[in-house]
Image (tube, rainbow, N blue to C red; front, side, top):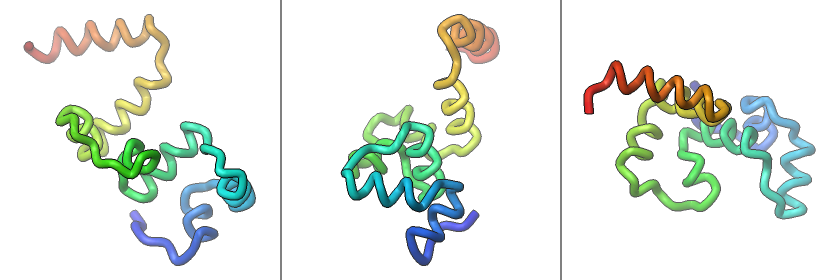
Length: 99
């Protein structure tokens, strides 16, 4: 995966984001949608927390998620689940992983 970009246009192309949208958001000092932030964080190899706040993650669980791409992908998918699906996933994990 590419981890450096020559300019904003190069980054936008890699992240599949509209250059004009990114420029407009910067001009208005508005926050991109969460989906865009997640793509940006992934492309830059930083946590979402770091991208938004500039601060490193102190929570060891969040840090382990951030450091493992497979777990990070699962966590991302979990954010799109409703409560009933989360309950099913939780029950499955309870049966697979001992306390």
